Length: 88
Image (cartoon, rainbow, N blue to C red):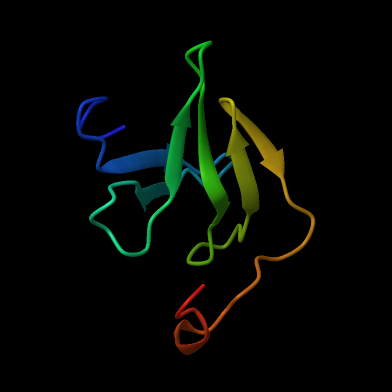
């Protein structure tokens, strides 16, 4: 977590696919319009939502990061055009 617990700004996650190793940067600050929500659990683990999709690398992986663990998605991520996101 970049910015620490006091002011979390970005989460940096290394792609979990073997041989990919791409670093994925996720905005978690409320000031960022396209952001992920970070939840810290009582046991010290962290969850990020929504899902993480690596579209700009050969692995094209899609997964959830829940309680410090990877949960793989079988389906490709749903793409909603920006003009359809308003009011959601």
